[in-house]
Image (cartoon, rainbow over all chains, first blue to last red; front, side, top):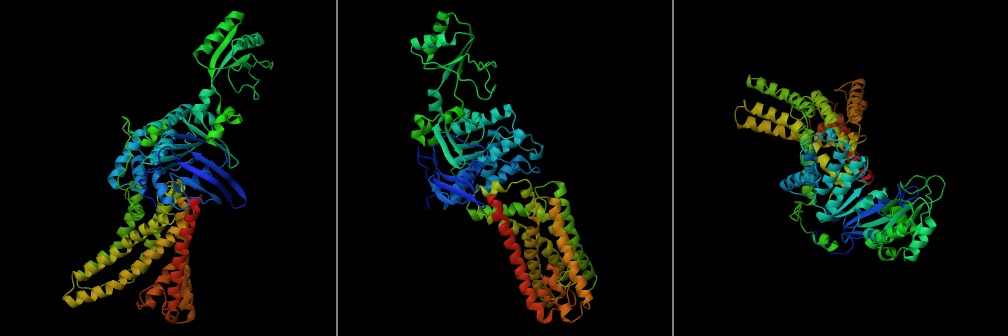
Length: 338
Length: 297
């Protein structure tokens, strides 16, 4: 067995699976030949409920045995080196997992001990982990007196206490209000970028994940739907939405004459899902989507609108939502990451 | 960007990783055992958690203190080391495991902490092993300390080395019986307590199992002619409760049949021995199976 301190290898995948299949008793297929690799950094693992996210995490932790296929975490085989892998992993479960009648410090210290830290180190790291998640002042309170947001932070702190190389976070924003979600995501992003810890965030909320991830892995029905680098893709696909009250076709022609291939935004399928989409019941679109190439794109749009003297309502930069990203099939990134 | 991360550059925010030595699995299990052992006596818990273990401990030590006083005033030792005060010990061991076995296992089930243990470098059997070790240790304190107090109280007034030696020789089988009790009742208490995360229920299950079986065995013994009877029915009546099974083993191994909880098992003695081993194996097997299932959930 390789020593635990061995480097996972700079730049290589932190998680690799090959043909991973898990069939539960009763012929329930949770994973169906999943082959995917996770690069270092923050990776979003997205999929609907029941897509197989939690099963994948259990196999990676060495807690569930795959029916067939292989999984490697930080260069070690999950089936044979479960303990060594778990020493390097921090796991934050989806559900509540905190006893109400102990203080956060005691609890996190205890779990630090179970992670294999010597007593004094466990104490230090528990205090530090709680400070990093923003619970320094409240750490001597009983966990039962905490708000949902604070409990989520304790869950994150216990994953951090063992000085992991990789963290698996299962739905970390569960049960939080919008402000709490933003704060939690910022915290996770900070741990990923500044603490040097690779992170896999499982979520069914694509829009959230998008904010902090470098890469996305989408699974559905236990199969890989798509694996892609989110930054490179969204940078390439930024668009400018131009909403005018009339003369949409004229503007499109004018922009085409200036070398900008603008598309009329199709009417939204689920009405009102996207604010400012320019739909007012008529089904008639008033918005053009212009590919954003740089600052000069704004100038061209401004000049065209001015030249035609059109009533401009809205001019906004828009990023593709993750849903679209994964629906768009002819994406060259796919070949690179799949 | 990714090279920076992989190299683990430390930023001013103050996060420090840890590359120092880590404890092996055996030491982690020991740490978990010690933590559980402390909580079996309510240490590290609130005042409420200490009430039952402390009161039980004081109550079980009282006869030993009384014995010391009686011996000091010229009396003889009040009870055998191998039986102590049998019914009191049955009652207090029942109270202790009914209250503290759920403290060790139901609490973690209730708050669903188990995944946090199983995602750490432990094997699936380690958690129940640590809990078993912890409760066995706690029961050893509860059962053996009164015996030691009795011993010290008796030899304090003993005259001559031979008297002390006689007491010591009587004490050793007593400690052995205490060990049997601690091991079996720890396994029994845990396997019953881990059936449910609802603490009140698991306390009830443990208490009712202990009390009902004990009275069943007592009633059967009485119906078959009582403690001094030699009929087959009386000899095997003790097989119906864990307390009387262990007492049957004690008598089989040479203990005094007049002072315990059962009629002399006679030639059925080995049956008591086999049943005690089977019961222990069943409890430990059930415990292991319970946590094998839990680690996958």
